[in-house]
Length: 465
Image 1: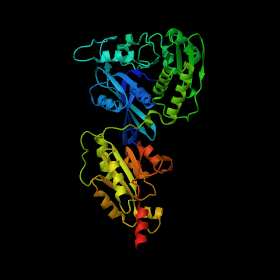
Image 2: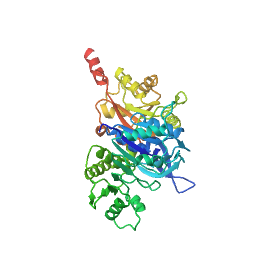
Image 3: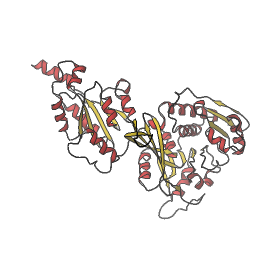
Image 4: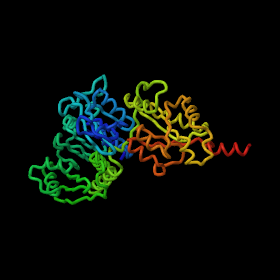
């Protein structure tokens, strides 16, 4: 697709607070969640735009974003990959915060009351001062290869409704219970089963009957009712209908964002010339894969480092540093290893790791741990001296020692945003990778500097003696 996919709709900021819940609050029968990591990502139309851009497509997002911390964070997350046409917002950017423990959502807290500001159908005129946001939106729609309307009921679709009538490119409309009815003539409307029940003007009988009724009532070319793990039910103008099954996904998988993934994939397929049947089948497959990989909760986006250096006292422990970084909204990096005979390869790795965030904590194997892993002749340098040398490096903010064979327990306590390893590892061969994921972090593999290894240095020293 050479022309961009234009996504019109309401964007919000999604936040996942990840932690552990091992006890109940003493004054109420509710779990106490010890927060270990906080992850930000776009939601609503913003998530659909991000997912489409990750497919390698040029994406323009027409949305309303507030000039507030949540709105600025949202723009920071989207602007590297998505062109944003920003409409004015009355109120504050909507933020939805999920508190999660060990992969399970315990509660969601919604804040923000923002709505797109302007008159429905308004397209402001051009002036010598430049092109207004509404005129830019009109230009974007005029040059689109396809349009996806992600209507979350916050007013963007209403403002641009007149422009969405009669477009000569495929229009996919992903509705919401608080949103407006799709414009007539959409190539595809993609309600969930619950949304379809609310849109249908008759008692709900089955997905087949409801999809066929909605094609007629909405004057749409096609309607695909998404059915979760059952796939979708597709009905087309002229009475044709049929199920589109989904591959099996483990029960209990986090489906957050699956509807946005479905709608974006369908719009991209239609823009590429696929038939409606093929577009829906592709969308079911992509949404199923998205859920199987963890859904929106598994997205790990580069978060801008804190605007100012994160303050923590000199000599702070690793866990004090972690708490200070979280409190400042920063990004905690951690790495681990033996660091026996510290060499230039180690220093290069640590410097590059520190550049990924606001603080670097190094987790060091104890002497006993190294003996179990490498034999009685190691370590050559005691843990006290290894810790002292690491703390002297300007790129290291704190050091902690662990006595287990792997750093999994200390990772769960620290809750780093990023766990860095050097070399040819992959997550499947890394025993601590699961602990990183449980703590809500991501694993980053950095290449090592060729020619440096502790084992090689020891062998060279013995050969020279």
